[in-house]
Length: 299
Ligand SMILES: NC(=O)c1ccc[n+]([C@@H]2O[C@H](COP(=O)([O-])OP(=O)(O)OC[C@H]3O[C@@H](n4cnc5c(N)ncnc54)[C@H](OP(=O)(O)O)[C@@H]3O)[C@@H](O)[C@H]2O)c1
Image (cartoon, rainbow, N blue to C red):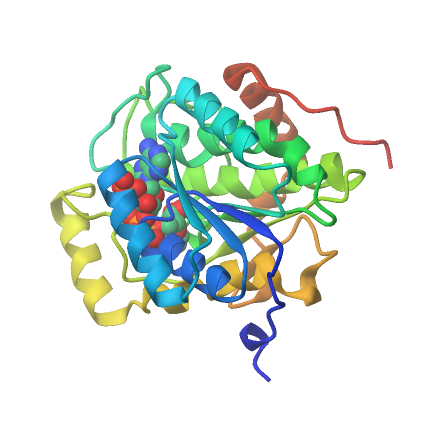
């Protein structure tokens, strides 16, 4: 049996998937709904969310699919989303932080945070910390953070130019944000251990999806990305396998703080294993998002 064929039944489980209206997130939703989970996708656009809901129901054969609004570029919107999830759910068994973007030009979120880092790191961290009580209410809550091997392009987390004000380069901003996903995963793991919650990060592969569409990534790099996507990328369905594996497989029920690719644990780069940087990013992020969690227990 291949590793990804070894996923558990998800009957009776509630799963929240950010960015579930497109690409890898939508295929993750279909995979988990097919295994019996109640699936709540988030979408920042109601019409895209509605269209995805219909497709997920049809392709999974499940009617237990819902949409909630979420724009990770606004911390106020993140709070509204977690309030809505508290109204709808008494527990969340799996949170898949899948939504993400890359931008050709520098932009800022509602709170003045560089947009890539806001949507890919600060928003998901705020969402996660505000949902910890619902994940703790599950027997074995799981958090799955969709990172990327693009983190390997970052030699260290750049605290000096956090908001890319001195110089903006789209790939640098993106690789920093994906590095932040792994640093966050490794810092969060010991903090939620006592609550019976696991957290792992992953690289989905190089995937044909809606990623970097509509001029999100312009210029020469955008062209190279578009051409190589056509030639070399895997389907979004294949790209969802590691997310589905981490969300559902009994094999990883107690695995935490790790980085996966192709359903196997991999060593992230040195920058992602830098615990001092992880702690510094955690503290800075807590302050910036105005959310916190009890510190890790001493070993
Ligand atoms: N594709 C790849 O080769 C690849 C490789 C490594 C890692 N990844 C990661 O995989 C994840 C999923 O990407 P994908 O390839 O499936 O791309 P995608 O099809 O573009 O999906 C990205 C999702 O994120 C959502 N999103 C973007 N900005 C948002 C915001 N401000 N608030 C809330 N949601 C927002 C998008 O919503 P809209 O539809 O409204 O834009 C969409 O649902 C991302 O985290 C990406 O970094 C992708």
